[in-house]
Length: 178
Length: 137
Image (cartoon, rainbow over all chains, first blue to last red; front, side, top):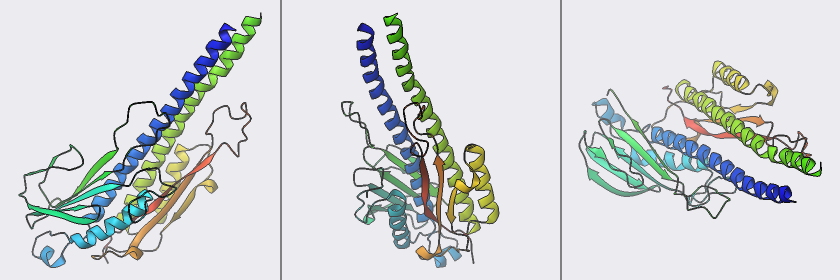
């Protein structure tokens, strides 16, 4: 009887451990995927620039087209609807929040939040990018697009654990050797 | 004798958990590798302007080398093979789409021992999306 009781206790503990480990690995995979989405979106944002300025040696991003493309691709890659709420087949649970920063030769950084223009500020090459969503700061040397996404909390079925922080990833794409 | 038999039964039951843990790690590693392979193929397609035959062949061979229990017919590759060009205004029609999938054949380790059919003990992992072309016209 003693062995039976101990076995049942161990099975219960093992079950919780196994479920948590599975959820953790799934969260980790989706965090990597979110990083890929950030990389992809920053490359997309940097793909649109003003051709006239470019012919004169300046890289000025066409932020209107860049944001339009980022919005469309984000919906496609993260399985969210137009209000950024995850749809049925999405891993994520909460509405996505994202910020896009365009640094270019105009000397003005334009910041978009969830696809809408938020603010702009003057900057100089060599200054530090400070992100509103992450503590990751990088020095801007070239025209750069930074995309940061807060995808909310991951799916964890074991509820009695401490609250696990939101999954936030960031990536930048820069034009080198202009 | 009774204690011995209960102990053996308990050990067999408890073995399921570490075995499943190992299986989860293996599956997780396979999916991560698949993601990397698919991402690399997508980045090649971005610079080529489409999924070229050599890119698709490399994609298949990379997947087959990572998934020895999967045959070529079981791999899902539904990608844009027609040429797409870089545009300076966003046009979804010029995007390079991809839908790449692979079966993960053993979700639960010791599935048969636990009464799970091989057909039920699998799922298809699919990556889907698009990238913008960098190819100039």
